[in-house]
Length: 242
Image (cartoon, rainbow, N blue to C red):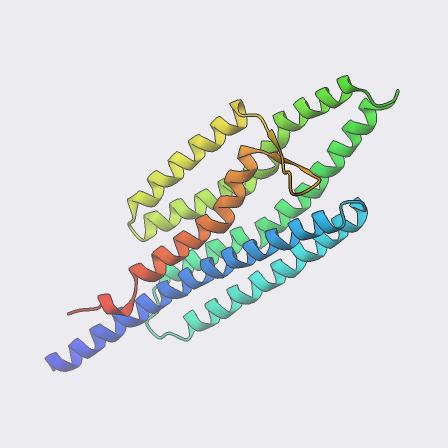
């Protein structure tokens, strides 16, 4: 009887850990897709920089394809988790929460990004009503620097909330502490740090570096990748011992 109970307990722990691994796999998959998306957009911006309209259309297509890929990875992980007889209900809820953040909320973010770009274009048109000038360019740069953080704030906070909930459910308080630090740094960058322009000698372009943008894209790529790897390694079957 004791042997049977031990086998059942090991199976329960094994399948619960496996469900947590699917959560880690989903986050890793999303981070990899985000990295591919960022690289593809950079390439299109450089290759078709003389045709902004073509670049915008290409970026919209890339974002749509990535969202379909993210949804596919989510459905796969959810399906595999449901096949587990002893899957952890809390982890399944976590996967659902991350699915909401990284699919529907991501769609809202992409839509708001388009609206933000249109607003910037309208501001530039208004400023240049009487013709372009250095003063207008300065005003536009100040406006851009002062508002650029709003573009990322919603999605940034949604991801931080996901990490906080993950830390709470998995009882990993360090994740909550990290979120507090990231939120503080983001608000500091948004409030006090302005965009810097870097010239590259090997390329005929100038690159504007905005700290809020760097923090956001780092969180959606390396941040999710590190979190996914952390969960995957933390809940390996090697840790099961009775």
